[in-house]
Length: 287
Ligand SMILES: C[S@@+](CC[C@H](N)C(=O)[O-])C[C@H]1O[C@@H](n2cnc3c(N)ncnc32)[C@H](O)[C@@H]1O
Image 1: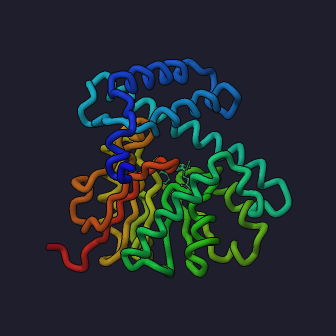
Image 2: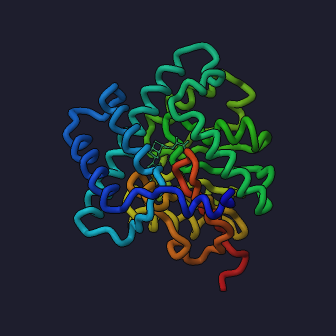
């Protein structure tokens, strides 16, 4: 039987030109939608897009033509907008039912977040971050599933400061945690553009940067540099990225995009998890 490694060589990869043609088709249909709020039509299109972008492919996202790059940048914005609307709709719904924290698994992508959190925690603990005291999650959103899953299953004594630029997102997230006094004590929500947060960043052992914070590459690099400047020496930064065709859905962050950091791990998932995970550390001494 072929070894696992060989199998991946035999796996049929979708040719880049076919992948690009189909992504353009879906982008065209999404762009024509009246609204990106969850609906049968919106859900079907995005499900197709995610399935397509998680097929094995040999696409090099840096080598796509300029016009396809422009389409990709617009698609990332559309995906981010739709993701925010989906989260807001779901969070608003469960904030109104008793014990919302016991019903998180009703969220359509709940298992993806559980798998992503498990992966992120494995990478963090392999690099010495086991039970950090204080963590910041930047871009927590109306449905801060990563913080919820991390706090419940992995970092059981950690305090989470969740930052989001959107007050409405924080209001509904607070309603969800208000249902559990213990949980609420270590799950705070701060409304701010992360670019306005400075001294506070020194307090965190680990800072998570959500994939949708800085949807354009140049913006994301500015945010990463801002966090590096203000975070504590020896602190960890976990950046969500995307690789290959998944980079049609989210911005990609490479090692070269993290000057001034020691890059400890770069992981590209091949299962149903979409985001790549880049773990970096701010050195104790600037070399
Ligand atoms: C939709 S959520 C996705 C994160 C997801 N809930 C999770 O648990 O991984 C992404 C959030 O990032 C927030 N965001 C985008 N840019 C930001 C910035 N510069 N500062 C703070 N929050 C930001 C958006 O308002 C949005 O709510």
